[in-house]
Length: 541
Ligand SMILES: [Cu+2]
Image (cartoon, rainbow, N blue to C red; front, side):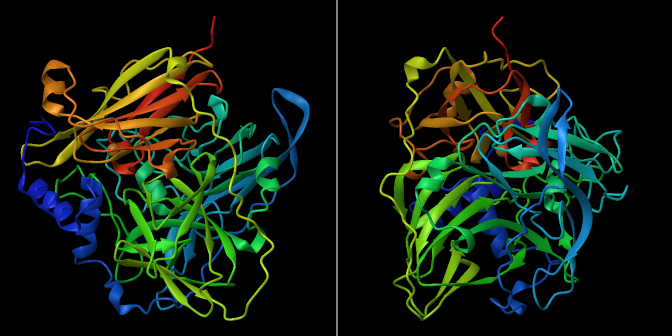
């Protein structure tokens, strides 16, 4: 098939999408967001018309907290007894809306998302991830994709996104297992308080398994967070947001391409935006402070969240934990895989009904009670110091391109990291405990949310550049200054938005465990079509 590197073609689709960005004004939108908006305007004919459903008729569910199933020993240390959890993936049926019949999902618990893992920093646990799924997948597998060809249809492997774990417990994409099998993973939890999430990572079908529902939240807590007296217990609520296309008979629908034997599509956006598994739910709240732990668990949609009445979020944390100080913002941008830890104060909104929106689309409603209440929680002005990693600490700078290849009709067909396929030799081998700068050079129109396993990092800056000069001469022609991260991104991260036509630089200390991990784009359709690479943390000899 004839391929062209993105940027060399101007298809009518791209032109339309650019127009989409233009009409939104102000924001320079990525193709992903622009495309998401387009899909919100024109969903496929074989999906449910959501406007027929009354909003705010279902209470927001909160996933159950996982309970240990006993204690077990580590194979390497038989005398160490650790809490042991068993999370089994099974088919489930869940009602996503009062007026719809149950929807089939796959989940690690009774509903989607699966149970929440409550963890303490420094307290190790064991989790047995079990595959109790049927032998047939219910979503369309593309057997041309690496990892899918010649392998069983139903496979899974669990990755705890954001966790600092030894490589054999990280859920390497090729370590998948079939129905009837399981894997026992060890989580040392040697890291600061943060909201993590677990999800499937099986090579070549990851996008389908996550779309099917194989994900959930994990929260690590520590003494620093305890001392802050933030809203807690019933005043701390996880909000896991993900979208699906829904058929008229209330089943999830995963679209396919028009190419026979090549059903992969570049990105999937549903118009049904679910929060904790419900469509347009409501949450009754007291007029006081709440803490919301927000996760974007979508395959490809970027969420741009705001309250209809202009109420502010006080963002207190990012992917990898607390910010130095709260950041007040009227909207939140979350790419797939990113998390935001926010405090919202409803005390001045007694009796109001407040809608949370994604741009102009309804997500959920908050119903604030009338009666005054006392609020013993705090929102401290100082949270947790985030010492800046100095650029002088970096022993290496890696220039890494994010490449998108299109057919001659302008359809994306393949995505690579630095021009390499998954099976090419490992090229990124940082030394254990060393610090490096990784520069993501993005000639595409997409924002690619790039995630590194096993480590946390800081964003240095983003800089607009001219892709053609770099592609042809390997020289940078910059079109603007280096822009530091927004205050709400200026904490510890594990996923960074590498915007289109920009160079995004991060600084990473590889102070995890030696071994083989992965880095990848968190648009799951991209990840499954080669936008994922192994990397290896190498022990000093
Ligand atoms: Cu991508």
